[in-house]
Image 1 (tube, rainbow, N blue to C red):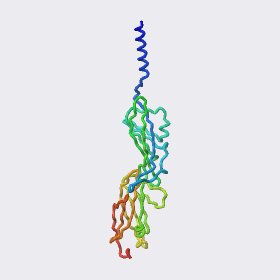
Image 2 (image 1 turned 120 degrees about the vertical axis):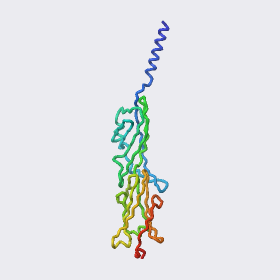
Image 3 (image 1 turned 90 degrees about the vertical axis):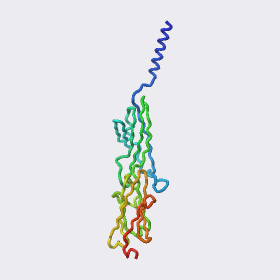
Image 4 (image 1 turned 180 degrees about the vertical axis):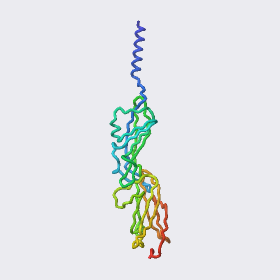
Amino acid sequence: MKKILFAIALALVAVACNNNEAVPTGEGFININATTRGEVADASATGGTKITRYLPQMESLSVKIEGENFLREWSSLKEFNAEENLRFKSAPYTISLASDGEVKNGYGAAYFEGKAEVQVPDYDQTVKANIEVVLANSVVAITTTERFSGYFPSYKFSVNGIEYDFESGDLLFIEAGEAEIVCEAVRQADLSNGKTTTLKKSVTLRPTTRHILQFDLSTAGNVEVNISFDGEIVETVVLDVELNDKA
């Protein structure tokens, strides 16, 4: 009788132990921890440029989660966090966060995005996705030297068709990749007839970077326009000079 009771007790202990074991569910949870970077690198120097005033609100960032045969999107991180009991099949996923809209060109048109790869665990466990959201387009600045301005008292610049405003208190944001800078300038000697000298230069812009283009003038022998990109001369344009240009 004692042996029977002992066997029953062992069986009850085994059942209790099995009930306390975690049961595989094949699913897990994702916790998104987003941060933003309020600075971009200056390509021509150490340090950076503050873009804090352009940072998006965390909760307004759109969310996209992609996996094998899986795609879901939320209009905002707030909407994602508000969805209760949001489970994902245990598998690898790519999580993307972005500011509203698409990459744009223009003053104040900052566009931010960030991504992270995660492996959703089993047993209803949670994986944390740490995502840094950074500027996805570029900041472009144009400067001229006194020699350039003295030779060309009238000029205007455009970047990918957007006129550059030297007086604007805003930053000019341009989509990363190839960009065309066009300068239309009038020489001192051409002020009376309005003849325009056109200069063009294509450059490659990097995301999360502030690029500086400088237009300078050299009159050592010939009249030349030196175009610098991030501190290095990338093109020298020799101008046709009439006799009265140097008068």
